[in-house]
Length: 373
Image (cartoon, rainbow, N blue to C red; front, side, top):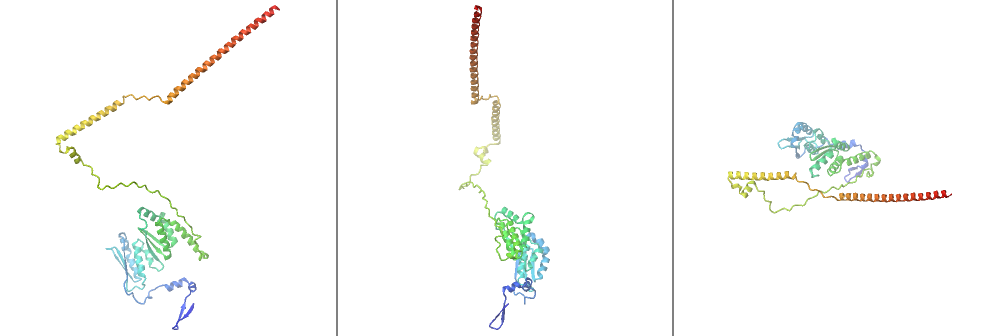
């Protein structure tokens, strides 16, 4: 430690950063710890905070309120539960020995209003624990999309939420349109980033992978003063084009609305039927019935006669014509072949007759020569 002599002769000691680094953390915590008796006198003014709670939390708060008042009495804080207005109030008293504890008490009633169980919420009174209530209701306007993304934050059987809690060392409670988180101040920043990105359509698994890598890198003292960007994964954004819904042509809005459909009475007034007597109405109805029956009878008779009408014959198609023509050509070819074969047969018969005559003449000549000899 260095010494600095002032004008009045007093010596002021300088504390270097190297000296603080050598001091153990336990001693620093003891030095910074605020205990009862450190404040010389009571607080000059009363501070109070109030918050509303939903109707379904009323029975639970009534059960745990004695435990709540006991835990706050240790710090000199008074609490009040108003079931008529549905509000919780905390305020300082003359016994309050820690001026900052009123803010912790305010966070406690906020967490209880957002469905955090009392055994977990009371841990906020510790100095090392902070909390944050993240509002997610206004991030997504579509209700169905909001429910899907909130469920994505929970994951199947709450596995995604458990993984986030283990990596950030925070307690997370999702209730309605808020997410309550409790834990170290540095981890609350990670939780807020994960929750807001999830509602903005970035899956929590990407942040979980990044946190796992960071946790492993933090174990290596050699990488304490180096950049971790080369180890962290880089995910590309994929913008999938969605088909735009077809918007039909807008109808022109007329200045006056369309005329209403005429009622039964209006139609009777137009036709004059409204002013007829009951007997005349009955006779008119019977006449209409007879006419409709006659029309129906004629229609049925025409349908019956239709069954006895001979169907129209279809004209010979081009295929049939071509088939007949082919048959005729075949017959002509056959006739030509027959004539050809007949002519050939006649030629052969003529040759045979000539050969027989020549043979006869030769034999006759030979016989005459033998006789003369």
